[in-house]
Figure 1 (cartoon, rainbow, N blue to C red):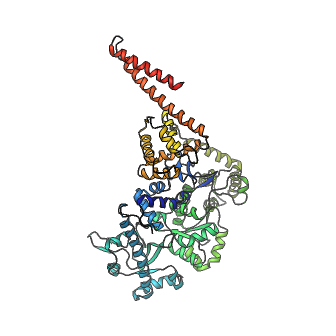
Figure 2 (cartoon, rainbow, N blue to C red):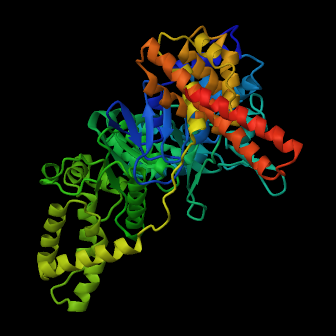
Figure 3 (cartoon, one colour):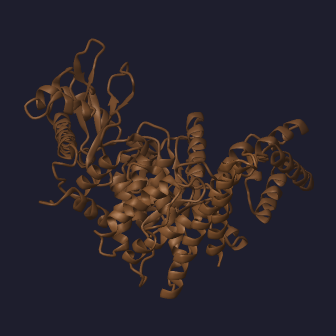
Length: 627
């Protein structure tokens, strides 16, 4: 806990605990190149990575859309939160007490703690129901019959919710208000306005976060006519289903140790697998796999080796395809998928960015069924020989081939195969697949090559982007203003901030945003004792809610790099050079304005003579600047 600290001091403490790489990597797949980390920007669609994380500076910058800032700025943008809300969440995460003047933070933290406490107690209550209530026998028998032993029930705290509409409310009314229960997702309002328990007569499966805290529930129906079959908690202040993987609390350590993850379809698939020893199994929580899920997986698997273990029926195959599309989207632009087991690594200098394999037991059983019937060791054998995604997809198409296929049948088969072959980036590997496919369906290899090349040509012309290239440019004056401000952010230089402030005090800035930043620097310069890092943090804090100004500050930090290591003489020369450019620009503008006015006056007009004299003076000033 932090006592007797100002809000500003608490923010500084929170910033000191944040690691920009950890923060960004939890939401963006990054690849180290040189001193920086690169990935596809989460704030706009792109295929070529232009999103950079500079760990040394503690900032991120997208050179595509211009977004930039520090770790707190990233959290604000990615979570669509205000600065104060991000600070509240981080303070709670780090166990830091915010001062009461920080805008309701104490109430927010208390509310979050109440929800967390209520969910933990509710988990214990449901679990005790399953173990002790006679009416829970039906639920307990169901679990035991599908191989969920008492040991597993106790380990995963599986429980039972009663049939009564207000049972949970009666149980906890002394300690928690209906508002807190609603915020926890445990009660719901009916159309008549009554408040009833959300979960009734269901098997309750606690969902935990990475820290092993209960944040939600998955609830399975018990009766045959009970709908829906699975009812899940809604999104709350603790739980977001698009960012939560069931079983991650147990799986994360094994994922890091073995460097792979097995993504399954349901809660019981994961429970059976983990209980049997396959600890690195996870599942989404009642939703399709999302990019956020994949990014969470990448956090714990450096090689990003992903096994998909969905059912092999029609619905399962569709889920596999949807998931692979999401995985490809998450890793877009960072490299190629692994597509060839035997020799692909020797054929390419680029290490693949992700490896997707599909576990498909011969009898189409889901993982839970298969493990119960054949055992975990047999299932692990399927994992070891699981085909790469492309091989699985090709086999799903080629298995329909029959020896008596007509030329038209073969052509239709090739049309289905074509998109898969075209995705192979390496020509040698692509030709090897063409050879294998042509042998399999008994067609001419050269003909298949011609068909692939023709299809590539057609597709490349269809997908051509003829939109004009737009580049962002800055005029000389704007660049000079930015250069002067960036000099304040050059660390490790002998020229101090007071010198800069004094030497540019008479320089008139033109850009409104740069004027605002300059004024902030002027005010902060007397408070920071020449500490550049402190100045940068203070600027990000002051303009936390202004994305445009934060982006400019990030640009200034990058510009400052070009002025590092200058001698005192060269540093001062840079100051004078940019001052001259700004003054020259201003004289030019005034000259043009005067010339325009003069053009509209009569030659014999007294006012005309006055303008001529002013114009001559401006020209002389310009000549002095150039000397």
